[in-house]
Image 1 (cartoon, rainbow, N blue to C red):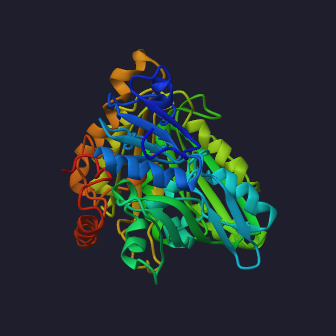
Image 2 (tube, helix red, strand yellow):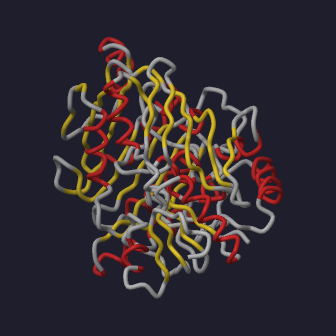
Length: 444
């Protein structure tokens, strides 16, 4: 095939019998959009990516790039053009002495965490298993221990990428600095395909674990009010989360889980940082002691709420509204909550540390995300529109959204500071004047 004479990966045209399976494999969400690229390219090497972009240029195709396929909206699957799958670029090189790593975009967060744990090193990987680092880092990287370390994109020291002209380049603070700026936060709006990330690593916290309290649903309002109130005092070592579901573990019915993951340097520090939990509302059905555990175990437990082989319709918001302002919307969320595993996630974030100059620029005190999840047609009516409707209701109280849980194809919302988005648009026009790479869904 033209421009792919040295290609070692695989290609699929719409007329191929294996095309549908290849398209299906690019999304974890079983709710695959009714969109069909002209060609799907599964790259295996960096030169495969170069060849693919050059082929797209020859044919005038726009390009969508996929690394792990955890985009709930399946943003990378577009009509016409090329879908470039780089999940096969998953090599990892760790330099323990320099505390650096070089990873391919297809490397999974759980994969690199397993390798780093052997060296007592740490990187703020995502909360879910299987998330490819390509999309995760480009959109910001909202992960474990992120309140202390910041979004994972701040760990990116440099990238290697193939630009719209099909040339392989390096970007860092000193080389192609504008592209480096864009790569940290542009997400699906990035105007290139990353082939390697160069990452800063950290010493692994000596104590990792969590404390959990479980309440019946009637306590939801009191628990959420308490979480909002204590938010400013929660130490940066802890990500305080609430999960509202109609099937909570240990209750086997509607309830709310209070989860306090801890990343500390000693047991004494962990207990000290958890002291705020003593002020939680009375009436818990179950309270666990703080138990140190492996991060891989915590990640596996998260997946109870995000099962494989299900349909997902997701939306989210950042906010600093008062609890009384949020309460009517929260009540409506609870009243209309679809059957499990659909759920609401509340996370106290409250960023305090200064951020680097990068495209990523949207955070706030509280993060609320809604996950409508269903297995078959019987659950679709309630779950498929719930998240978007409830987030539309609460939009006046939102300061923006996080790209990891974006729903931009159905509901426009700010995801970047205005000045940053304007700069990104200028850079895109300069580096990708022909629009080789797809824009954000919902934007012309």
